[in-house]
Amino acid sequence: MSKKLFNFSKLILAGVLLFSLACNSKKTGNEIDDAGKDSFEKEENKIEAMKTDSTKPKENPYKNAQLDIKVFKNDTIKDSHVKGFGYDIFMYRSLYVHQPHIPAINGNRGFDTEEQAHKVAEFIVYKIKNNIMPPSVTPQELDSLGVLK
Image (spheres, rainbow, N blue to C red):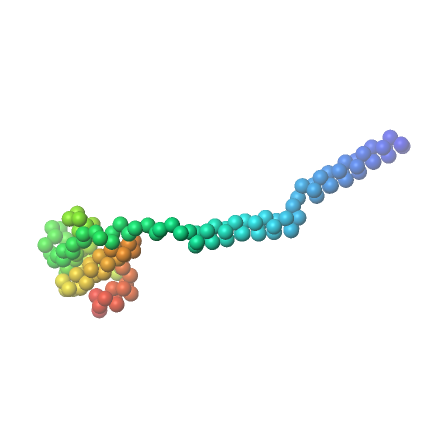
């Protein structure tokens, strides 16, 4: 009987030991919160450092670029099924943008007039010169330019 009691006390002691080890290895809720706070504070410090960074912003590479616009009638393009006008934008005499149809709308429809195509091309040149990349347009911008009717 004493041998059974001895084995039973070993079993209880082993259980208590395992339980205490398991409890000590886990972090408490406060420790997790502190770790999260530390991480959050580090991110805040990085953001503040970026705000107060006194380095000079990078120079706009397109500010003084030589950009030329050429408006064309789509029926002059071989195998083109698009009607109306389109435009090309050349940067330093190399083709940079070829736009045979109105961008940002469904379908492949050219501009109704040469003036509309030129107005949108000038808007794209403005975006390029101001380093607004990619130099895309939205239907709202086209509407404000008077291209969509």
